[in-house]
Length: 423
Image (cartoon, rainbow, N blue to C red):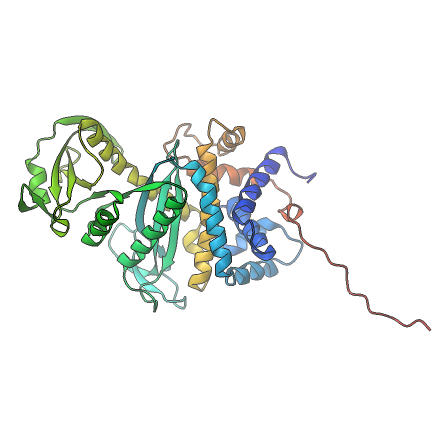
């Protein structure tokens, strides 16, 4: 440890203390793998196994370290994964609001355009492309919660899956599995979710489930959605255009601060007759017409109506989360099996969550402010500090002369000695 500066020492200690809490009560090889993976991902800001191996600075050949990490990612027992998730939830829930938690969910893709032999490759829409095109890859279902103070994203559920796998039913089924796990976890810790969704989730299957289970939601609607308004079935687009919008406010939209008007009215879904919910419309944001939100939260006055709108506008933070994952070379990882990819994704989630927790501690923890300063960003103020904070960690750890072997309790056995008969 004599080679460590104070900053690298504190940063290593912070990462490993967090990982040790998450991997508590797992077997020694799994705990060591978690330490190696999360430290390597954070230090290099990369998911490439070769880069992670370089950051460990082990006194063996690099290829041997790469082989060890790759092989271990394929052989983590399910009970240990469940234990890691349980520890993870217990740790991150401390940074979430005490009652209602804002949960954003969306799908993204894992682009494997040039891969041919990976397990169960399927066609996915390339979300990063300016034109609509489909490439080889995988679908990813993600649920992200926002922290109490900084509204920093923390993943609660992340699964890579393929539409060509034998156990695949539908994308809706994968989304509902994620929702059930998030609800179960939050209920254990006495929290309730408010699901905030985009137009892709304007489907009766989600509405019927959430209304039946009394899950709170805010969902943006498409223009061809039918609603029951004053007892008559009408297109939501027609109902929205008839509203005048009496609540005037300013909203940030596509990087511009725009004045808009908000209105709300009670409606019903044809698939859920007898249950009144609220349609909130926002006028003046664009020339495309009003934005339409459907919610089962209480909307009684202009303050609560504006609150619903601002809840939806927090949805872009999941897009920021996806951008951060791609900064870690997530799509360039060279693992062959879906199991290994999901295990790597789990350790990446832990690494990014550690960064989100440091962001949540800004102005409360000296070390968090120090890391942000080391990012050397030209931008002093930001809405989401994830990118700056992760860069700060990378800049500090680049000066570390050793890895984390000195921090790990590795059993050293004496060499076997052959009995000899002295003549």
